[in-house]
Length: 248
Image (cartoon, rainbow, N blue to C red; front, side, top):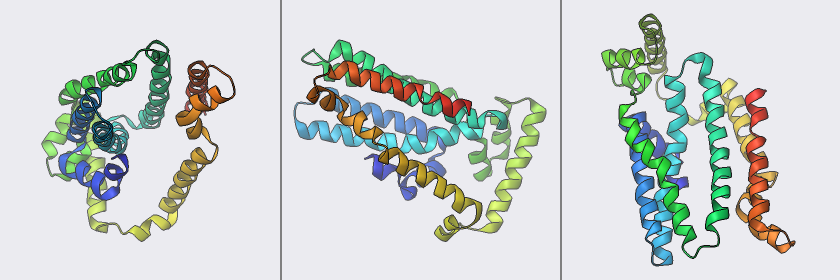
């Protein structure tokens, strides 16, 4: 589900047609629907269906949340907020490990674990309608007055007007260039950024961290350690290792 919804033809359609805020709301609702299916699952196919539906939301939210943050945040805070987004992911993994200490020995502990993770999704679903829409998306829809109102909720009026002009200028330049081609990803600064991004994703897998994230308990148990305790330590290291990226 995650792979399908994060594919550019799917995620870009949702983000550009529904808008950033609406995509987050729909993604949150989809995650809750998948989680409910898993909590009340009575068979393996029912669990797999719930996982698939929740995966659809994760793929979409992974694509849209950081974009929405960057389009609403002041330029001086955009990089920091993107890094904090990653920090919150590792913090959530660590928190889940700590909660596992209380739930792992319960017969229905896995149901409670899935139910608890519905809390943040429910908060996101309730709060997002009160957040402003993306001003860049509104400009793309030729809703200029609404874009200015959205900017005024997070900027001073003078700063909002200046940034609106910048967004409109950028949008006009993009329209003049026409639809981007896939080959554009292989040239110039965009090609370099793509290479950096792909390299980081490859290195994340090749260092073996994800293997420990998924199979850590079994690995630790096979070598005679407490699987829950040492998996929590592994997730703590993962969380702490995020801070150098924030600082440097």
